[in-house]
Amino acid sequence: MVWPKVSIIWLNHNSMKIIDTVIESLESITNLDYPDDKYELIVVDNGSTDGSFDKIKEFLDRRSKLRKKIIRLSKNLGFTGGNNVGYRARDEDSKYVVLVNNDATIEANSVKLYVETFEKFPGIGALQGILINRRKKVIDSIGSYLSNVFTAHPFSRDIRDVPQKYEALKCSFVEGTFPAYRIESLKLSMGERIFEEKFFGFGEDVLTSLMIWSKGYSTVFIPKIVGFHVRGATWKKWNLYT
Image 1 (cartoon, rainbow, N blue to C red):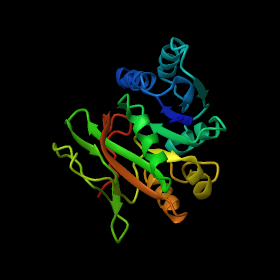
Image 2: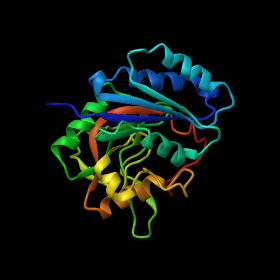
Image 3: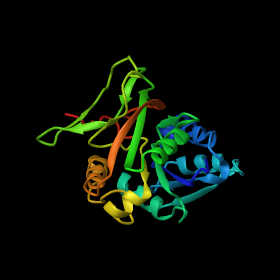
Image 4: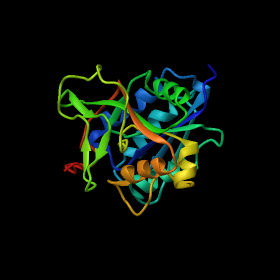
């Protein structure tokens, strides 16, 4: 198949305390099994003041073959604002946009798996795979659903049996750790942004997925391990789920 272009957005903010994890995250993106000329990495630094930006730039400067854009903001615009800045800086011919948290490492075949699923099912607007919690060695994220009173719940979390037996399922929303979006669905539902910036962080991924649903697209999870996440490394003890 002819591989479409993908823009990968990666945020940083004062990550010096977890710099080894952060560099591992970037390393995993540079080692993707996807054509080098078909994806770009957009790094957005959210006004870091702890020296982490310099470490990240030093790492990226050594990756001369990597197609990359580095954006340094003067202040912290949050998860929503930072990702929106990166989104607006994407190549105009990108078909899909992928977000990667800086405390997550992704599998080499993950982006290819995402793109293959999108291309096979044009009705999918957003998706994610299985993320494993690196500390506990259990499922960290596999897609989530909303209850009748709009509380958010994961399909599976903190279990050790990776559900390869599951079929791909539609879900209410995909989480912001390592999701992918069809840009066409974002344009219809959110305009020239991924997230509503009234949310600084938390809840924004829910709204975006619901907006995508409202335009006739679905959000799904696929039953394949796509990465590993150090949950809480960036956002400390916050937990979306109730």
